[in-house]
Length: 478
Ligand code: FAD
Ligand code: ZN
Image (cartoon, rainbow, N blue to C red; front, side, top):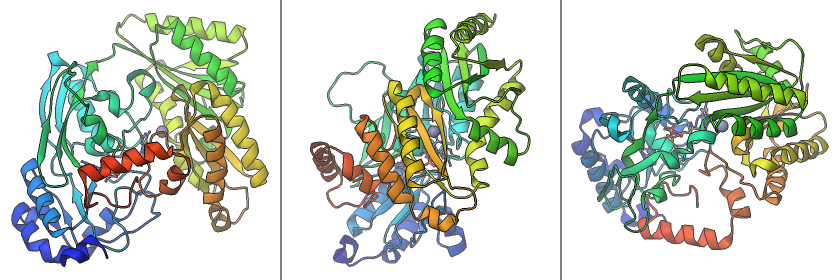
């Protein structure tokens, strides 16, 4: 028997109580209006919910959670619903209420001299980036969904993106959190300290917890000086091993100023040029692989550009690079980034794509790409691997386009089989089956297959001590 049934109450029963807490603006019940809250980003699952509640303050979140806890009604916290593992939507049974943070979107305080910003969980990532820039600061988290995803979601998935190499994951960008616990109590941990050794670092438990331990309502984020020089270049390389050597070289020769180092196979660029308007390959000679390199520097006079030119010159002599081009303006830089960002969209025009978000030690990335590609080519003859992404973090989006003229449904039916084979390779190399997207619902079984039993047991104990009745995002992560 489920807990909601055991308590004898359903979401419908407590709707009036919730409505009294949040008022008419805070409740969505029209079936059409509910639709975007119950379907995941890629349209893989469509759940059900009695209603969506949209509190406007931490006190309202606390009261809503307390009412749900008393009635034993489970909750799915939701941000921008851009997550890629099905963690942000309710199950088909329709028991969970969706708690959306979108109305809590205030920047509470930007303290430029402390290099911090205190924001509510419903702030859109881009809004925080812009607020930082207006104060001559940088908030470095950067990813494709930044115009839609929210800080609470970024925290709860420990989001990565394209600047992790230099600035770290979301986990490394946080000083404090405010969280509503599963019993409705508020933990006010909005500390703005760089140093605080007063016991367990509880905030880290909520980061990457995907809404299973509490609702994050606000956070203190780290800011950095805004870069004065940004250098963007596209380099053609013969293979991933050369790309890796180039990464080592550029990091060493530029005072570790590399912020992004994105690997792209020729196939990805061909797809992008063919299918996405406004994309062109600026390098005339075809190459099997490319890297998009970006560096941030603190001084405006071009020293970093010279350093990267020198490093690329040396790489050219060592035959690590066959060609390269520099962006001469912000718009040329944006054009280079558009190639990278168009890959996922372009792949859609080539049919079905079986996806992986994996990591291995950076030094093993070339081995992983070679071994996993050979494996899937044996499994599905004619398959078209498009391994791309964050080489600097050892994080490859190992996405596999269907063979030309294959039946898309039959190809996608092999998703789990192909995932399992690729994940075995990842595991054998000491890697992770989810580098930056989390576990949610879709990667639950695979995570169970690989995670150390001791680690799983500790995770279950932590979950139980925070949420003994399993009311926060049940059935996700563990
Ligand atoms: P949601 O999808 O709403 O939620 C994600 C999870 O967090 C769910 O489990 C949800 O229950 C929980 N949650 C949300 N808000 C809260 C809260 N306030 N308190 C507690 N739990 C909460 N991810 C990367 O890491 N790197 C990338 O480069 C990247 N690129 C992407 C590009 C595109 C085009 C898209 C669509 C997605 C991409 N993602 C990427 C995945 C996604 O954007 C991130 O996971 C993002 O951090 C999710 O934020 P969100 O607000 O949409 O969260
Ligand atoms: Zn990514």
